[in-house]
Length: 222
Image 1 (tube, helix red, strand yellow):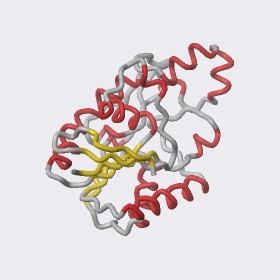
Image 2: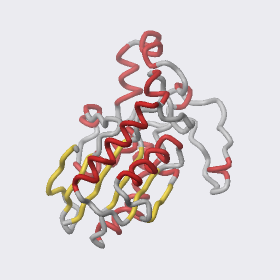
Image 3: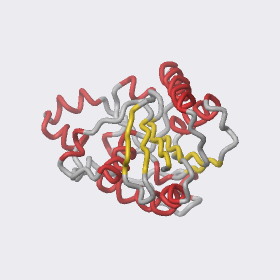
């Protein structure tokens, strides 16, 4: 058996202010920092030794990763950052208060944009330019559905996470709510209609025990 632990970053300033975010950087709040420390302590209590940790290019996930690694006393393990683990890009909704958007467009449209698998949010009129991505030849999205985020994440799973698990190396992934929902959809074989019911809380590690074919044997939220 091999262990895969998934964790959403601690509360960010955007979470606290209830605004849409995505590929833009927002810091952790004091509460988010505390959540990361507690999550690390919970992971340490399991005694799990990891070979690798995977995170995104976004500071809220990177800072959470560093705190967790310190708490579990495994800062020495290989750390892999990938834009493919970035949060779903909410396009032109970015920076807008969620409650205000819901009042403007109605609850049905709001839920479609926020929770459904296929719905694409209003797109940005032009792409952002960021050295983090330009150096890799990656075009930032104008906006993404969860399906689009799923399609960019899965190659990273196939190339960088699954092979290490198949070699019996425990893996830790610290990323974002939507990108983790995408991975959970794949791991738990959740259909397109039911994924809207899946919620991933800030700072709540999810530990999967997987068999030799990476089927789930056990799942627990720490």
